Amino acid sequence: MLDFHWLHPYLLWLSPLALLPWLNHNQDKTVAWVDFIPVDPLSKFIGFSLKLLATIVLLNLIIALAGPYLPEKKVERVAEGAEIVLLFDRSRSMDDAFAVKGQPTMRTVATKDSKRRIAKSFLIEFVKKRPDDRFGFVLFSSHAFDLLPLTYSKEAILATINASALGKGLSETDMAKALLKAADMFQGQPYRGSRIVMLVSDGGQDMDDEQRAKIKALYQELRITVYWIYMRSMQGMTLDEADDDNMLWLDTPERKLHTFFNEIDMPYRAFEVESVKTFSEALDEIDQQQTQTLIVEETLPKEPKERLFYWLALIAMLLLTLAQLYSVWGVRKAHE
Image 1 (cartoon, one colour):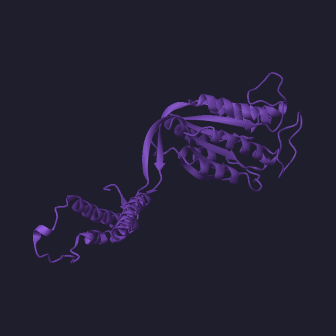
Image 2 (spheres, rainbow, N blue to C red):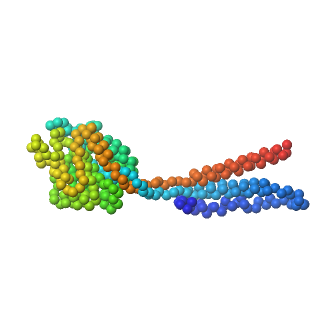
Image 3 (spheres, rainbow, N blue to C red):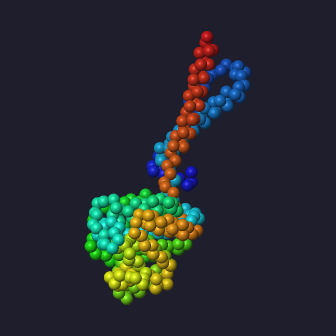
């Protein structure tokens, strides 16, 4: 009981009422000769037991009414997983479907095959498969918004992913601000073994030297791994240059961002997806790779305890009731 907290602690001042059964009820009888009174230790024991049961009833009812509970607390345990910030592109192009070979994508807002809705569905499945991961969520277009700080709450991250797919996207994208915002989530956090920024986007950005320097320094300092799930806007174009490249692909923002990630000293891998199947395969591979041992912090919820004391009071009250019924039966039996 020393660990209990109380909703109504002032009710504990009523605890002395539990001594009422032990007070003298003025049931003394005058007897002409003391030898008339038989020695009956069983009756004394039964009388003592009934008073004790009455005390137990009163005391447990008072404690239950005071509202005992164990407060919310945090515990740590060893598990396998990672800390992952989902960096989700909410630009207008994510409302399009996957690319058709040799052609730009067609606008398909509000249909099930848009890239943002496909990404939402598979990210939800990815989160559900990783019970010990700690997730954060950053949504970006022209601005970056840290919608959810790092948390172990699966309900919170799933609700955030669902909400991110609502509405229409904006036309502009600021990838540099988004990358910095995602890394900032790890600032001031103890390193638990594996930090990941998972970028889900169909575009890139040509950043200036200052932006590059900030991103490089921050990601190296915080030991962050970057996974880029690149949702192609045109089939045939790859992030790495090829001998048979189309001239239009040589200087695209996507390739510039990919080159930048490869040049800085940090773990990085890009997954180029152009269909539902390749998107699923990319997440499966990330899921298999990121199973490092780490310290997981869990929050145990507040635990009410008044039910225990109500049950104890009820059991004691039932025993008192049975004793009273037996007494009534015995009196009737004696007068027959």
